[in-house]
Image (cartoon, rainbow, N blue to C red):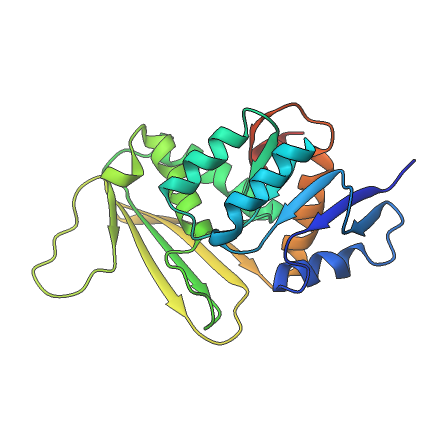
Length: 233
């Protein structure tokens, strides 16, 4: 069987190096610079448009793991997904993918008497907040409640006289050290709490998940996919 050929847009970046390390010694994976089975984008928001253009021109699936994307990027990704298979993942950890499913289910079961707070911590060099993973978990909670996250989100509380709106989803971001990624989703109900947590101990888990996502993407028809599709498969 031919190896899975992956083309990395940012091979010298943190995730690019982690994926290369994960592929080392695995005969089923080959990192290439030319013709590929799947393109892998963990670069920067400014590079998204050109990376999607390459995927469309070459008719190759693309995995997008870049975070900090805006609404313009959302539209560009949706447009590209009409021509090629696109998998967008704020976090490629298989554990986080399963956590998102659990968050959605819990939010669906618990009513508005249960407040939802999302706490995340990352290394001191991370430039965007809340993290893409935290926002994805917030979207999962919003889906479970049948609401739009944009209309029910509370971030960066500061000051006095602050009253938490019923049904809103709160976010808190911590930065420091070399933390790869910690995420807690807190369901705070009357006299009890449920806390769903994930701890990333190294970037290797994201690399393994990215490779699993790339294997899933190979040969897939045009469309927009997620890590939920990967764990479902």
